[in-house]
Amino acid sequence: MQLMQDRLLTPDQVGEMLQLHPFTILNYIKQGKLRSARIGRVYRIRESDIEKFLDSQMLQPS
Image 1 (cartoon, rainbow, N blue to C red):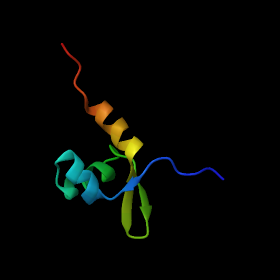
Image 2: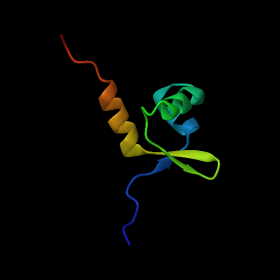
Image 3: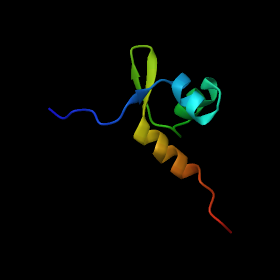
C-alpha cells in the first residue's frame, strides 16, 4: 500500500494560503481549474495540485 505524500487541504486552508476567499477556491474547483476530491460533503485539495494550479496561472514574459 502506498502512503500519501501530499497533505490534503480544505478550501478554507487553501484560501488562507493564497489570500483568496474560500468561495473563490470553490469556484476554481467547479470550473475545473483546480483539482480536488470530494470526501463526504467537503472538498480536499492536494498540495501538489495547488502547485500545478499556480504554475498554470503564471504569466509568460512578453
